[in-house]
Each structure stands twice: as structure tokens, then as C-alpha cells.
Image 1: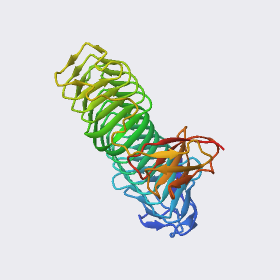
Image 2: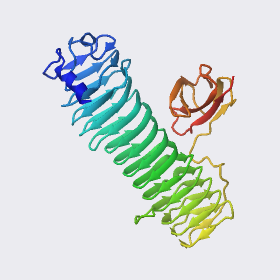
Image 3: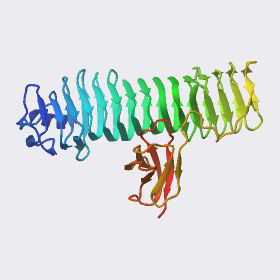
Image 4: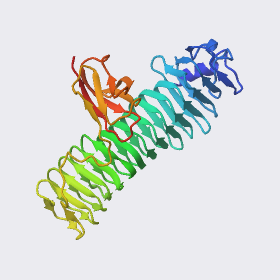
Amino acid sequence: MKSRLLLVLCFPFALSAQQTITSIQNGAASNPLTWDCFCFPTTDDNIVVNHAVTMDLDWAITASGSITVNAGGSLLQSGLHGLLVDGIGSEYINLGNSAFNQIAFINGASAQNDGHFSITEALYVGPGSTFDNAGFLDGLDSLMTEGTFSSTGTIYTGNLLNTGTMNSSGPIGADSVGNTGTYSFTAGYLYCNAFVNSGTYTMSGTGFIETTQSWYNSGDFNVGNNNEIISHADFFNGDTIDGTANLQNNGSIEVWNDFYNSHSLSGSGNYCIANETYNIGTMNGTFDFCDNTGGSIDFNTGSIAGGITFCQPGCSVGLTEFGTVNVQVYPNPSAGVFAVNGVADNTEVVVYSLAGQRVSKTNVLNGTFDLTNLPIGTYLIIFADAFNVKPVKINLQK
């Protein structure tokens, strides 16, 4: 990236004083005719994009410079290029459509996304930097934040790692999620394969976490009254290295395989477990624990407080839908036109391949959505405007 930036600073049309530069036509970012200054913007300018601009080189924003992509405008990479936003006051605002290979915010820089932001590889938010997402953020291979990341919009990513502060109240779909910092979940859902928490994670408001693989907690985890965790595989609460794992459950936890606790469980919610259950830690509080293989704990060498109940009133794994909206998509499989119950008209339908790539987007119209433009196969769809609706797997057969 350094060589690219050197070209920017040495560009013969570059200006030395910070100014506001606005696009006047569609074109390449490196073409002076694209901008009203008939120059190439420098790293500290305030750049406004109102047209379809292609980013045909690596770019940096420094010294309180900014890029604003307005609604109807777009800044899209041409080739594999990245963007660095560096320093307090330096910012990127996306109200339209932005797409990059890589983007990083460091040293107090900030971002605001109210439109569609697509990143093919990595998004990094460094210490002291912030990213506010109220739009649609997708295409990511990895998202890492050591700063502050807030999302009321939709995120679809491969790997998500938070070592700073993350605040989420919108839908998130991911391959794997790891938290070693502070994570506040206040609404929506988190749907992922694997989940690991070794920091502080708090669920409040209404929403759910669903994992297709195992769920691990070796830190502090709090499940609020109107929240649910569903693990399609094993569930672990414990730390094998000197630390403590504290899980307070005031909502609902459903596990489709085995359950292990080696540290501390508390709260007043309920557990519904399909297979074997193991406790070598402590179980305190007034929660209900129901093991579908026998009611109580299968293997216990720890302590269980007298306020714990077992299977009152009982449960059945795979049937609970605590805190979620009941949505039906049919027929499934289909030749391309699907009907949907439980989602309002004009709700955006975003379609992903099983490899995590966004392949199509449409809207619900008169209770249906049309995907006949896609080839046969299996896809995952997300109703982007319906925060408590789970992703749905569909099959196209023609």
C-alpha cells in the first residue's frame, strides 16, 4: 500500500490544501475529470461521491479527511484494492453503495454505514476507532474490531472477532464468532456455526443466538429474560486454564446434543438438553433443568442448589421458538417462486450461497419472492428488515 500512496502524494494534479471535492461524472477515482477540481484528491480532502466512481488504486484518508458516498452514488473497487482510514477526525460515510477488498480504521478514525457496504476480504476497526452500521454490511471473509463497533443494521460475514466493544441490535449471520472483549446484544439475532466467548457477553431485550456447531463459554455470559440460545451440537461452560466461566441464564437455553458445566451456572431461566449432561461445577439459582434422557443431570460430581428444579413443566428439544417470529417459506424445494408467511411485503430478501457469498437480492411482494434467476442448488436466505426472523435454508429445483 505504501507505494500506492506515494503515487497519490506525487500525482501532478494533487493539491496541497484541504478542500471539499465532489464527483461530477461517473469514472475512475484516478481520473481528474471525475472531480470538480479537475485534480486527484489528496488524503486529507473531504471527498463527496454522487456518481458511480471506481476505485482503481489503493487509497488512504488521513489528517481529518473524509469520504462521503451519498445515496445514489457508489464507490466500488476495480481490481483488488483497499482503503486505510487513519486518525481522529478521519471518516468514511456511506449512504449509497461501497465495495472494497480490504478496509481498516485506525488511530481514532470512524465509519458510518447507512447504505450497502460490501467488503470481499477483511474489515478491521482498531483501538480507539469506531464503526456504526445501520445499513447492510456483507461479503466479508473476516471482521475484527479492537475499537467500538455498533450495529443496528444487518451483517453477514465469515469470521467475526471482537476484542474491543461491540453493540448489536440487528441480524448477524456468520461462520464463526469469537468474543474476548465486551459484547452487548440488545435485539435481533446471531446465527453462526461456531461460537466462543472468553470475555463479557450480555443478552438483553429480545432475540436469540443459534449455532449449528458447538457453543463455548469461558468468560462471563448473561442471558436475559426474553432471550434464547440454541446449540445444534454440544454446549460447554467452563475453562480448563485457571479462569472462571460464569453463565447466568434468565431466558432459555436449548442444546441438541451434550451439555457440560465445569464452573458456575445461575439464574432463573430454563435449560432443555437432548443427550448427556455433565456437571463438575456449581449450579445455583432457581432455574429449571430438563435432560431429555432422564430428567436430571446424568453425571454429577459438583454441587446443585436446592432451588434448582428438573423438568417442570418439561421440554422437547427442537420445538421451542422462544422470542422468535414464526415464518414459513413454501413450497421448499421450489422452481423459483416462494411464498412466505410471517414477513411483511417489501421486506428485503438477501440470498447467500452455502459458501457465504451473496448471490441475489429481492423483496417480498404480495406474500411471495422470486428467485427463478438463480441456478438450481441450496441457498440461505435472510429477511434483512425482520430482526427476529431466523435465516431459512431453501432449495431450488427446476
